Amino acid sequence: MLCKVKSMPKKIHLWVILLLAGILVNCSKDSETSGQGPDSVDRSANLLSAGSSGSDILTNENFDRILIEVAYVEGFRPTATALEHLRTFLLERTFKEEVSFTYRPLPSPGEETLTLEEIASLETDNRTRYNDGRTLAFYIYFADAPSDGDEPSENLVTLGAVYRNTSMIIHESTIRELASRSVVITVSDVETTTLTHEFGHLFGLVDLGTPEVNPHEDTASSNHCAVEGCLMRAELEFGSGIMSVMEKRTAKGLDGLPVLDAECLLDLQDIGGR
Image: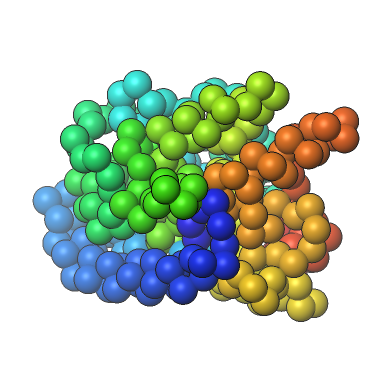
């Protein structure tokens, strides 16, 4: 799922991204499974389609700990505040006993923009943490370059996307530029909302792998919630939309950070979440 400024013009684009991600996963399995790499690490369980591991993330049946590898281009490390918000979000929504982070600074790939293929290739080259025993591992890459799919002239910018079951890209440079336009919304606010929204998609929301208990998917934007104010609303996928939502909440005296609505929570509880 991508974070863009507008949802309607990009509906087809979102499905193309997901389809392409599935193709990338299938192409990767032969070369990245146990015994094929130099370290013989079995990577196959971390190369599945986005939204397919909701139950594993939410319950303790197979994993009781989460480890997130935070890979970032030097100079674009995410704020500690956003990562603490993410830790709290995961502990509140899952039954995991521990959520921890490991940090991996990386040199810039030197690209003006990044395609999904390039993002997946960077993960292959740089990811070091995979599922290990009872620990479920994630990889989040904070990039210094915007998405190749951005259309600045139309005010369309990508903030983040999930492209595998435990993989996420955050366009940190885009987030910082967007947050700089507001006097009330901070970088950590935008990072937090983007991270938690994208983790919602990794949970399988909305109907991305986790079935709906009651119909609430937005008919105009696949895999997003139709309930007003929900963290999984389509406008929170997009740059100007995310800023508008948070600024309106702040103006009303509310916490600027959106939360999951009752329908999304019911979907998560149905597959073992809190």
